[in-house]
Length: 101
Image (cartoon, rainbow, N blue to C red; front, side, top):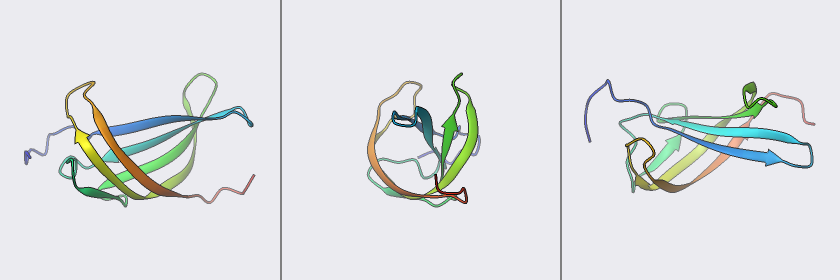
């Protein structure tokens, strides 16, 4: 692990579709570079990982923030190179102040 504060922040993004409502969503996990390590459970707590759920418009642009995530991420592999393989699992709850549909 490098202790270089200029390290880029790893981001994991997952795309999803709600076909019933014809909406697209993006879950993103912005990971603290010092926490980005395979084999260690990392808290999605807005300190080690900032996580969120956003709705995406028809042009593929983020249109609005839906909620914040709380949970954890466990990486099995965590390649730092561009296009490198990342493998793992995460569990998260979504917290939102938006009215229920």
